[in-house]
Image 1: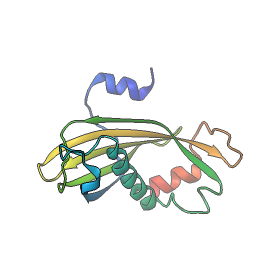
Image 2 (image 1 turned 90 degrees about the vertical axis):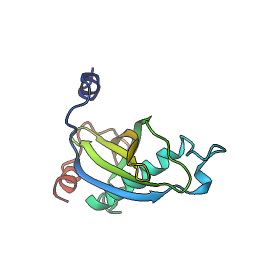
Image 3 (image 1 turned 60 degrees about the vertical axis):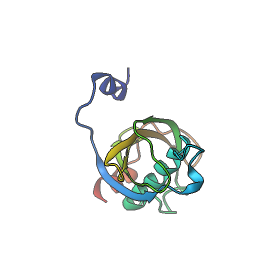
Image 4 (image 1 turned 45 degrees about the vertical axis):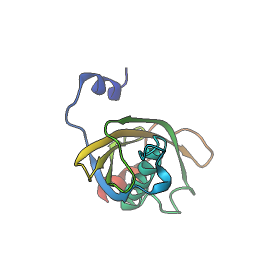
Amino acid sequence: MSRERAAAAAGPGPVRRLRETSIDHEVPFHDVDITQRVWHGHYYKYLELARSALFRACGLEDAALVPQRFGLYVIETHCRYVFPLRYGERMRVAAWFRDVERRLSIGYEITNLSHGRRAARAHTILAIVDREGRLLLETPREIRARIETA
């Protein structure tokens, strides 16, 4: 069992939040279904907005680094929905690195600001490959340094 799965099985505890960044967003009409609730698939779009902000804050969107030298591929995603988001409500999407040693594991929390409640908690895991597409078993020092010192 992986460390992450073991930690999840152990229940809630302190979660490492390295370089936490957040964005605020309003639920647009085109993201809701007939019940005026956000369709579940759109949550991943909100996670991507926060992940992009996190990468920008760490200088990981530098064209000389990615995609020139490394590729980043999402290999796992998970989202647990807790409280709905509805049309016109405000949300905050926080993103942070949970693990940067062997891959990039990013945690997320979406808060419904209109109700002051957590709407969802999620994570994505990104694998890193070199220019030739070979899987790297450790996160390159250059990427870790940008995350840890940004």
